[in-house]
Image 1: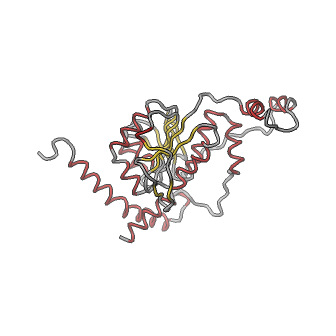
Image 2: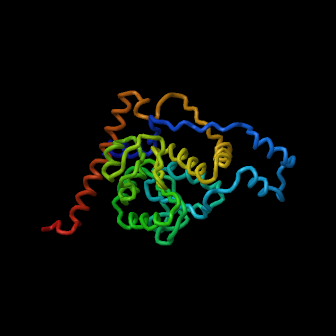
Image 3: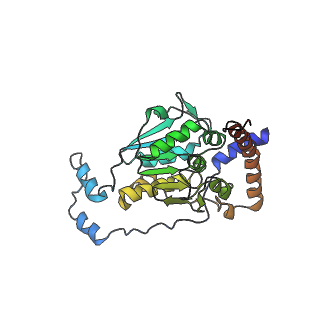
Length: 295
């Protein structure tokens, strides 16, 4: 039992980066067009010219994004949803945390969160984000009501996305079938193939309107990439500067290829101890409820 509890704890904090990094797009500090615009700017931003100057510098989004929803549930990984929440919260869109049931939820790290609303009250979103975790994620991936809701919401989204093992939930809805996708490094090929997805082995991946990321921290990269795709380079850089998002870890790691073999073996073994019994149990329950199962 102790090993299982440790496995659930560790998977929530160590879903990290993929070996195949996206090379960041280089942006000139000052292009000729920027210079011409700079010459027209006032000395400082005042309340009365704030919106005009932002529009001049940042431009307009490709698509008007009004409603963004992030699914949350007991056991969700803290950074899986707070990272995207911070990024998207700066777009000016309404961002809501949407829970499966009424009441507060408790994250993987034991933080109690007050959701904004529940899935029964949400009929349409422009962006849907499905974060991951461990035990709670596996359970949610077998929740028919949640999967039906995801399919309904997806019919009207501009972007549908997942972070880390959130791809297990999105995959279980059937929406990743035939799509290139990324997820947590742990048994990535196995879990994505289970849902008919094509493992991309990338930090984040987009296939059409579907965006998926590797573990935890990669969800911020994916969210910034979505912002760049819709709001543009300068908007994305503005958010990154606000976050001072320029990672410089003190030691190489974060992907299987960059991790000591013993550490990698230990982590996978503990994940297996926690995940396998739960998946096997839920599979048996699901099979028992299939039509004709008692014949």
